[in-house]
Image (cartoon, rainbow, N blue to C red; front, side, top):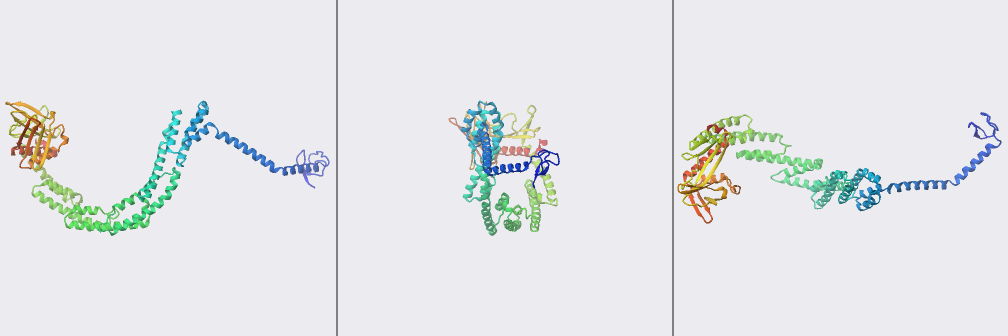
Amino acid sequence: MALMNCPECNREISDTVEQCPHCGYQLKKGYAEEDSKTTGRKFEVFRRNRKKIIIVIIALLFICAGSIIYCYYNAPVRKITGYLSVGKVTEAQRIYDQKIKTDSDAAYQLEDSLDDLFKKMEMNYGEGKLTYDEYCEVKKFISKYYQNYEVDKLDSSMNQLKNSKASFERARQEEKNKKYSNAIFLYNKIVKSDKVNYREAQKHLKDCQDKYKTEIDKKIEKLMKDSQPSYDSIEKEFTKNNFLNDDKKMTAKYRKLKIKVRDYQISQAKNYQKQNKYQEAIAALEKIHKDNIYDSEVKECKTSVEKAAVNWATTEAAKYANNKKYGKAIDVLKSYQKYDTTNMVADKLKLYEGRAKKAVIKEFKRLKSKMTIKYDSVDREYTVVAKGRETGYINLSNSINLEARAQVSKRDKDTTFQLIAGFQQEDWIFTEQVAFAVRNYRETYIIDYNDRYTQIMNGGICEWMYLNDLEYGDLFDPIDKLVSKITTSKKTTIRFGAKGNGTRTHILSTSEKSNVRNMYKFCVLLNRYKYLYKYL
């Protein structure tokens, strides 16, 4: 006996009963057997045709999927972005003219897809499916139809990729030339978005690093054998290449080199100290690596050198001070002041600076006594000339061909030195050049028309020019150099000349040179020591 479901209440009943015991539904005699047989026949038919049915279903699914894919990829916007993403502008232009140009909806869809297009182009460029030139052509295409779209927003990342690709090519060339340091630097510039080159770069980078380590190892060994070892070149490599610091063997060898340099520089410092060359001794200690400067040997040597240097400086300064050379005494002390821990140098400095100031004031007053000084209330300036000469005009004559004077602004605390060359005689030269001859030194000043001053006086003529204010003054040596040559030589010749008008030659007198020397020193003191203006 088998069970079946009642057609009326759907409850399970025996297939031999003629009436449902649950709902009373009248069953036909043999219904169950017939229904079972029918079901069996249907299942048998399905079993025999199962393969055909499955094939038909699968075929229908493929047809539907193909239709969807075909419609998707053959949509105009999808097609044109596909072409543009790989730089096929010509094909994209054809699609645009045929499908999008006259379809406003498609044009809007294309505009909405531009962001995705540019992301795709960046990815394709990184994978080598798009060139930079093609990318630029796509930008032109987009700009042509969508002027408001920011086509340059991807330039930064695209340029980064472009530089990455260029770096890869250069790195390969440097590696081929066995310049491993340069190759490592360039390989490290390859960005991850440059997918093809990045993978290759990582392979080559490891190889270059290993070869470079071998090179550095040999350099360290060579320096260790050097009688005058230095770590500078190796320090640069360790600073530039972090992977060297990760190698324990390399860092251990480098540490030994720094210790050897330390011992050598300590030895050098001690030798310089014996020769009283303290600046050189201190410089030698400064060459010791920062990792070793706190070593007991270094600290002991440094303390000894600095103490000896301070003692020597104070002794030397005292010698200069005894000869009233306070400037040199102060310079010596200032050179070693930072090494003094007892304030001995500071005390000496204060003493000598006080003496130096008194000496400067005394010298300034001495020079002032040799000057004639007149104040101009309109210009608010002082005119300074040699004693006995006039401030209101140029003091040149047949015998005086060079005059030094000064213009002083007490309010602005500014002094201008003036050197004037000129002469008085019966006829014009219309000077075009002024030449000085001092021993082997020669300087010829070109005189422009605007540089030359002329005047008729006492039946003769006068010509003069300001040598420190010439039109072409930048072409010549500084006036300070000429002054130095004039004031330190026994004989100085000056010649005024012009083409076709002859020349005038004059040997400077002792009085003329003295005037230049005193006036120049007077101006230098005022410009260097501003406190002197109150003594003017």
